[in-house]
Structures are given as C-alpha cells and as structure tokens.
Amino acid sequence: MSVLEKITSEDAIALEDKYGAHNYHPLPVVLSRGEGVFVWDVEGKKYYDFLSAYSAVNQGHCHPKIVGAMVNQAQTLTLTSRAFYNDVLGKFEKYATATFKFDKLLPMNTGAEAVETALKICRKWAYEKKGIPENQAQIIVCENNFHGRTTTIISFSNDPVARKNFGPFTEGFIKIEYDNLQALEESLKSNSNVAGFLVEPIQGEAGVYVPSEGYLAGAKALCEKYDVLFIADEVQTGIARTGRLLATCGNCSCSDKHCSATPEIKPDILILGKALSGGAYPVSAVLANDNIMGVIRPGNHGSTFGGNPIAAAVGMAALDVIKDEELAQNAFELGELFRSELGKFIEGSTIVNAVRGKGLLNAILINDTEESSTAWDICMSLKENGLLAKPTHGNIIRFAPPLVMNEEQLLDCVSIIIKTLKQFEK
Ligand SMILES: *Cc1c(COP(=O)(O)O)cnc(C)c1O
Image (cartoon, rainbow, N blue to C red; front, side):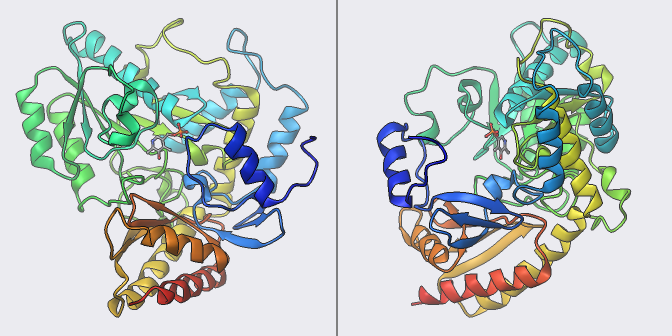
C-alpha cells in the first residue's frame, strides 16, 4: 500500500487499530488536509479545528510562510547534529532570545524534552550556584500538572492513568496545590533544598484552570525571596495563545506590537514547544539568562535533532508569523468575544455550567459527572456539525482554535457550538 493511495475513514481507523499501539483514544475522524482554521477529512468534509493540535497550530494549518521556510531548508540542509555548526541555528537563537528577552536558548524537539532539560538545568544550578548538597535538590510542582510523558515527568504527575505501573519514579519533587501562594511559601520555608518551582501559567490539560489574578507575580516574588528558580512551562500557553506572546506577560492586550515582547513576570527559565513551530515540525526550547544557562557545558546535555537547521528555519518563520499577523492581539480580542457570547448562552443553560480561559485557550464545564459520556457525545455532535474539539478530564471541553481565525469565523463557530449544546439541553 502506498502512502498516496486513497483510503476511507473506516479503513484508516481500522489500520491504526490493528497496527498501532492504543495509547490514544481519538475522536473518529480521519483528517487528510488542513489550511488555516480548517481541516478536511478523507471524504472531503470540512471542519473548524478547535483543538489546533493542543495549541501547536496557533499560526493555522500549513501556513505558507512556515511551510515555505521548511521546504526551502529541507532542500538545502536537514541535519548536521551538533558535532558541527550549522548556518541557521545561531540566527534562530538570536531571534528567539531577542523576542523573549533572555541571554541564551537551548534547542530541543518536543515539549517533554524541554521540560526535562529545564529540570536538569535547575538541579545543576542548585548544586553549582546555590550550594545545595549533592543529590538533595527538590523542585516544587503543582497538583494536576501536565508537563509531558517521560518517566521523570510522570514521577510528579498525579494522574493515575499516566502513572500506574510505570514506576519506580524519579525522586526530588514536592507537590503543592495550584493557585495557592500560602502553600508555596510554606513549602519554601520548610524545605531548605528547594531549587525551583515548575508551573503552568494556566493549567491546560487539567481543564484550562486560570489561576487567580496576581498568583504568578506572587509566586515569582516568593521564588526570589527564597532564591529558587521560577520555571514557566509555556509549552501550551505560549506563543500568543492566551492573548499575549507569553501567558507570563502582564495584563496588557498586546495592542502595542513591542509591548508583547516584554514579560511582566519574567521566569528564570522559560519552556516553549508546540506553536514554536506552528505545528509544522517538532521544535522546543529552554530559555534562561547566562547566570543559569552557564552551568551547562559540553557533554552535559544534548539531542541529535535539537537545533537542526529545519527546526531553526521553521522556528524563525513561526515567530515571524505571530508578529506580522499580530496574533496575540487577535487571540485577545476573539477570546473576549468568545467568552462573552458563550457566557450569554450559559446564563440560561442547564447543560453548561461555565466558560473560562484567556485569549483563545478556553474551556466549557459540562453539567455532568467526570465519568459520564456527555462531553464526548457533545464532541461527536460538534463533529457532525463541522467543528472538532476534544474533552479533557471527562466533563470539560477545551476550545482552542488557530489564532488566524477572523471574527466572522469565530461567530460562525459560536453558533455551531450553541446549536449543538442546545441538542443536549434537558
Ligand atoms: C503538551 C505539553 C507538554 C509536552 O509536550 P510534548 O511535545 O507533547 O512532549 C509539556 N507541557 C505542557 C504544558 C504541555 O501542554
């Protein structure tokens, strides 16, 4: 069977079911093409994509500028490994560090790898700069976190499905309640060997939990007080998704093109992935200043593909698109509109309890138990009505369209969502 041979949705699903490991439970739709905010299944049905590959496709499907950079670089030089220099990586590092205002960048491929990298940097900093005794460093994390799937990362997850029978686990993590500054301060006070605090500015996978106003700034201040690194995992929230270039930016609406580049709460270590490539290629990165990144020396860490020329070219193009098309501003404005329109519907709804989020990272809470199939059934009906979304944690549906959406399309989507939800009103 050639990859170009046409198959039906049914056949494609049957193939994955028979020959693929069952580590996902996808919605039964088989996509074969994407452009901007739309995707098409193999039968030609068109859908609005309201997941954007978990916020990797912020710049829209197959953005010509990103694909152009990728194809051009793929025809020139694809991989050298870091045993040699390549002529694109340095340009990308310069561009990304200028954009996010850090001294240095360490390139990786996936989000989980970038999180692992940040943890390693944090520990090494703790031993070499803070003076924590060897093997004693602790990193504080939050309950209901999602940082990826490696053995170390699931060591501090509290999702039983992600952890069960994957032990023994990596030590050195302290779990506290999210959005609770008192818990953070108590933990910092009672443990002298804390090296870092790893946090998602909004907990995406957990169900789009937006912390209280001032939580991130308060946490950053506590980290400074106790000489602990504030590590922001912006793999999902970063790159304009929440209405600013980074979710750790202040409460500006990014109407000033230059303002978006100045985070108000500056993390000590910033973790990026997903939309750093616009979904075209795996590109992730860890950013930090010299006093922290300087602990990494040759041989300490690496990746065969990390920093490859295609990734570097794609990363630059992906950031260009965010700036050129003012996608942070667009996400901010459309997000306000989305929540206000759905909010009006929810007032009289028995099936939806709430809508929450920032920018175009939003979720609705379905009025049913986590074990119920209601959210899944709603997503199946949304699919029939031409919009793709996926439940997270049973009774929550995340809505995260590409940020290249326009107002007319967003209102069209709102009407599809409301029409569908109405079918489920009791
Ligand atoms: C998706 C995600 C990751 C992991 O990224 P992968 O590329 O899937 O390894 C890490 N942190 C957060 C917050 C994420 O949303």
